[in-house]
Length: 64
Image (cartoon, rainbow, N blue to C red; front, side, top):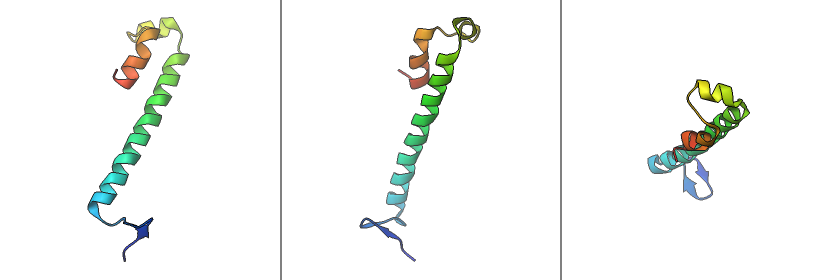
């Protein structure tokens, strides 16, 4: 059986891979956002214990 959604054949490998890639990027975004929020909640002493400064959080989480 073939599933058609908005005119696309979702059983086609390229379409499925495309959706999987998009979902992977969305999951990664939310995981990094959560990590950034959690690190931002730590005090400066705890950040120093793991070798970070507050100004390093964004760069370390987002690979900037």
